[in-house]
Each structure stands twice: as structure tokens, then as C-alpha cells.
Amino acid sequence: MTLPRIGVTLGDPAGIGPEIVVKALSELQTLPSAQYVIYGESRIIHSAEQALGLRLGWNHEIEMRDLPPGVTYPKTRGPSEAGGRASFLWFEAAVDDARRGELQALVTAPISKESWSLAGLSWRGHTEYLERDHPEAIMSFWSRSLRVALLSHHLPLREALERVKKDVILAFLRSLRQSLDKMSSGITTFLVAGLNPHAGEKGILGHEEETEIRPAVEEAVKEGMDVAGPFPPDTVFLMSRGKPDRMVVALYHDQGLIAFKMEAFSTGVNMTLGTPFVRTSPDHGTAFEIAGMNCADPSSLQEALILAANIVTEK
Image (cartoon, rainbow, N blue to C red):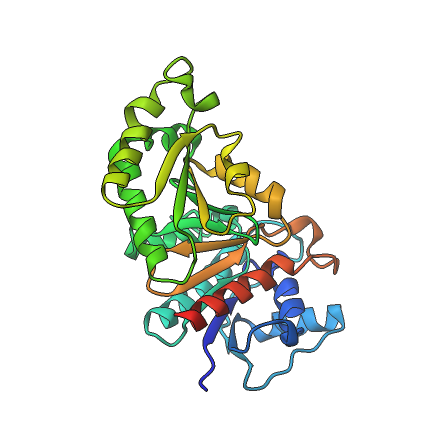
């Protein structure tokens, strides 16, 4: 049997990415059988191995795609132009390989949006870069108890609220349903969150539910989708929690992520839907403040590796 090839990027070299990659891949017995291809610099991996007292088994299951970006890394932790450039070049190379079919999935360690900005990059993160060629890409979050999809993600709140329109929501629901139908997700039902307290109380606390959200839900139902809502944002996540056939549709980043990270901060996974290859990542950031201290928890990255491998295998 041919093993699936899964790319793993190191993320920002000044963050916890190298540490959690080494920790996760040093326990191959806990991961699905696959060929894991690390995109980064071998010197960074070797340094992490030495600091952690671990060694990766360099064999047919783990290989290194050594990509020196030709930069000198800062000696202090934190965002930097060098870190942004390196993490982007590693990610870009892995995406190119995935598009060519050389990888079946891509798992990305955390990058710093500030570092990317310092490096002169116009994208705010991984998902925005993928949206360049895949405009229907969707940011979603998965754990064993809760699944959430975001109508909008890395936008200022004022801009995100402007996207709460019937046509935008309906197009999003169509794309989400199409993306999930291509994989064995088991998700059949979408629960759409309201925007205002108590989902607007029939217009008393806001009108968007009645003028934009409910009409989009009703049109989606007419098209044959199992969609319900809008529901009060403070209860919709409880309605989906522990029910693997349900996914909450949150209308902006923090509406979805506050609930999700309270539920599964250490084990949650960010997955991009709507792309021709699987892409997952931990649901946390670079954690510059603890980088190099050997205290970073690799659980979320491990779950991202497991989810990516399982989806590829089940396709």
C-alpha cells in the first residue's frame, strides 16, 4: 500500500513550531501511517532535537525538504522580518508541491501575521494566501466535540459585519455543503448563529436576523440543505456540542473562536475547506513567549496530523 504524503511546515522559526513538530513526529506510533515531509531548515530541526533530547527517525516515514531561505534569524523571540520570510517560503513551497499532487495533505505549524507583515507580505495568514487561487476557501475548526465554520475570518469586526448579507451567507452555505460532500465528514446539519443578542428578538435587538440571515437560511432549505437558524449566539454552540453530525456557522472570527477554544484549545484543529488538497493546522499561535522552553503542548498539531491523514485515507 502506498502511504499518503503529508507536508509539515515549521511555521515561524522563532515560535514553538519547530518544537511541536519534533515532539509530534517523534511519536509516530500515535499517528496514522503516512510519509511526513518536513518543509524547513534541517539546522532548525537538529537544534530542536538537541534542545528537547529527542531524535526523529529519518526513514521512509519522515523526510526533510531542506529549504534554506538565506536569512539570519534573530537571537530574541518575537516577530521579525526574517521569521516572516522563512515561514512564508516554506509554506509556499509546500503549497506548490500539494498543487502538483506531490502531497495529499498539508499541515502547517503557526506563523506570525506580524512577521509576515514585516516581511512585506500582503496576506494576513495561510487561509488568505490560499484564497488567492481558491476564492471559496473556508476557515473551519474541528474537535471531537464541536465543529465550526466561519463566514468571515481575519477581518476587522466592522468589515466582518458588512458581510452579513443574504447573498453572501447563501453562497457560503452552498460552498460549505459542496466542500463537505467531497469528504467523509459525517456532517449533515448546519446551525447558523444570529448576529445580535438573542438573535435579534424578532427585530427588537437588531434587524439583520430578519432581513439577511433568516432569508438566506430559508433559501438554503429550499435548495435541499439541512440548515436551521438563526439561533442565539450564546446557545447555538451548546446545540451542536457533542453532536458529530452538526456544524455551527459563525458569522465572524471571535463569535466562533471564543466558544471553540474554550471547548478544545489544546486539541482543536483549523482546517481549510474548498481547496483541492487537505490543509490543517493547530488552532493556536506561535506562542513566542514560551518558545525554546520545552513546555509547548504538541496535542493540537498531533490532532491536525491525525485529521489530515484520516481525511486523505477516507477519500
